[in-house]
Length: 120
Image (cartoon, rainbow, N blue to C red):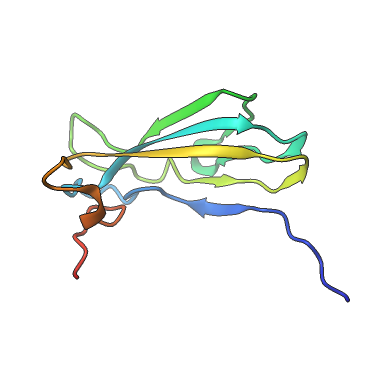
C-alpha cells in the first residue's frame, strides 16, 4: 500500500520555560524520566545544547532542572532535549514534571508548562 511505519520520536523541546525569563508561579521547574524499558538500538535522550546524551538501562532515572533557585530564572536552553527514534526494540518511559507554587488549593492544571494561567 506504499505506507511506512514511523518510529516514535520527540523533536527537540523544553519542558518548561527555557528563555532565561523569571519563573512564573505554577510553572514547571524540573523533569524526571524513569526508563522502564530501553530499546535494543536507538531511543537515546539527547540534550543538544549541553552536548550530553543519556543512554540509560532499564530502571534508570534521568533528572534535570530548568530553574535556578538562586536567581529565580529559567534555563537558557541547556535542557532542550529530544528522544531519538527507536530503531530496534521498545522504549517505555514514565515522565514526572515538577512545578513550583502549586498545592491542593492552587492546582497544577490551572497553568501551562511555563506557568501562564489557563483562561477558561
